[in-house]
Image 1: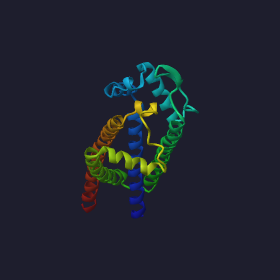
Image 2 (image 1 turned 180 degrees about the horizontal axis):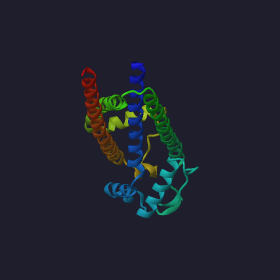
Image 3 (image 1 turned 135 degrees about the vertical axis):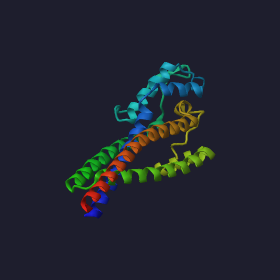
Image 4 (image 1 turned 90 degrees about the vertical axis):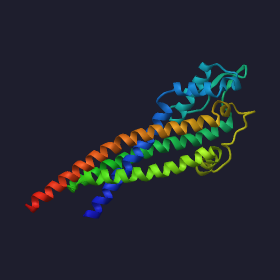
Amino acid sequence: MKLLQRTMAFLAALSFIVVLLITSAEGAIYLDFQYYQKEYEKYEVLDDLDMTMDDVMDVTHKMMAYLRGDREELVVNTHVDGKEQDFFNEQDRFHMAEVRDIFCNALMIRWVSLGIFVASMSALLIMKANWKKMVSAWYMGLVGFLAAATGVLAYFMIRNFDQCFVIFHEIFFDNDLWMFNPEEDYMIRMLPEGLFADFAVRIGIFAGVLLLVFLIVAWILHKSAKRKEEDQNLFNIS
């Protein structure tokens, strides 16, 4: 019974962290589109595209709606390079379709993780386990491990973001169609590598804040549950 309880507590903590991480990424990417505008200004993409900010933001909104599954096709007619045309080419569409699959799969994983969390917590309640102590302990341990892994990843990203960027794409894509030519592709001019580096930091901040908030909650729950357990043991001895 104890092993089953520990397993359910582990699953509850792990699935909850997965929900937080995916939610953090979604929030960092979709919560504030003004951030995109600031990034475009920072990297002077309007000069590279010969577009107005309104047109670039229109393309951005429609592109992000597509990645979320809210648009069927990635076709956006706009004014670019002094003429009206589709902003995206066939390579863009192929690659972004693969990115869309990753986005949509991540959202599905979040729902599955939420279901696992609810099921695991329900099982702990049914078994009358000390869930506050067990789940919070696993959560704190997993967050500590995640913090260490993130520190290592951040070290390598700071040293050589280019290489990390390439490795990321080699892991998630089985082709080289993610490699674009700025001379021919508008999309890569709108989304320079520096923008992705900034978004990696932004996602890290969002995730760090959420994880820290619940880490404090977990610490409070763990201390409270442990104190209650100690008081109960003293009462039983008496």
